Length: 216
Image 1 (tube, rainbow, N blue to C red):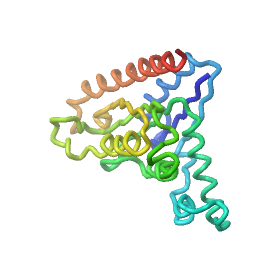
Image 2 (cartoon, helix red, strand yellow):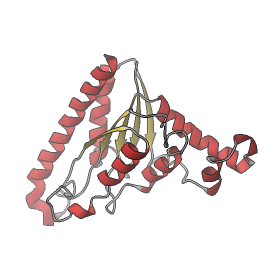
Image 3 (cartoon, rainbow, N blue to C red):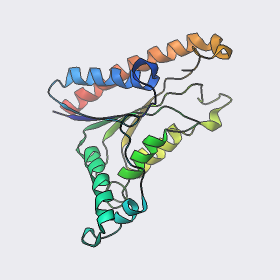
Image 4 (cartoon, rainbow, N blue to C red):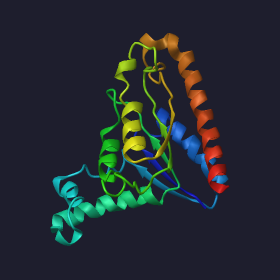
């Protein structure tokens, strides 16, 4: 059976988080299709991975036999995260927009798993793995909107996941998530509700289609 690597990075728990609500819908459908499959789950808000250090970085370019104790310990953590990515048949990432970009905890995970000569470079070790990213945001940064130029989540993650790691990336984008809390956005609540419903439906549809594809 297939293995799903599920990563959440929202600061907020449960239904208080738009990205978690959508990743949960995806995961539930996935597990319905794969009741005997495995899910590797990382909640980066609850259990963040270490930000990359000089030891962890330099160890990636050095012969393991020459690693100092500090390099060996730091690199072992990187390898553990990399192996989770390599073992996954599909990846699900919750990536809310904070201050125009991804949470620092998600950036830390990416910094650890991007290793030239292994996951990145000429022959990326997880090449072609399907990745579904739930890129929620409080406003709208879609093409044609006033803040289109501030969209640094999808653009960045496309560069990193698709270009650097050669993964097969797909996005689900719940937007206007601040409308119910911000009185100045009250007229946008219907658009938020429509976006949320569409995202939940997309999550279930994409999870089912992906599960069927991997089972074929």
